[in-house]
Image 1 (tube, rainbow, N blue to C red):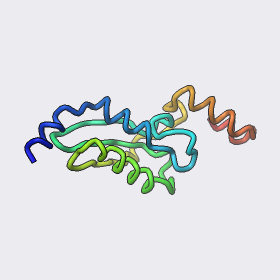
Image 2: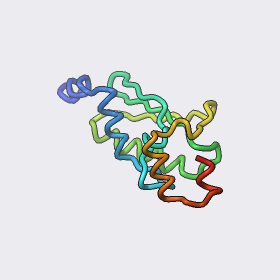
Image 3: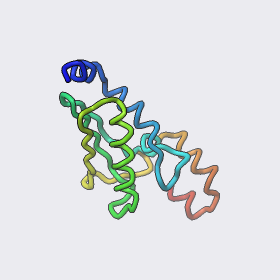
Length: 118
């Protein structure tokens, strides 16, 4: 068990962010939760990884799926526990998205109603 703890100390927040790049947005699977700006913070506390996410809207039906996917992906790094907090206080806006993600959505959805939302 001691060797596992030593290994965990070497993990960085950047490695967690990198792992999160593998978590697809369940509703737009060509984009990740990082691309969408859903992940708002990442912390490490000993052997625990803490990820905070802000869903695109409060009633988002994919929150549970995203939490589970985040936990599974970050757990691969060897953390004893991965805690995912859902922040309903901070409002998500399309300004949180990476510019490349906005372009990708523009390519996918050409409907003016949907496209103007982004």
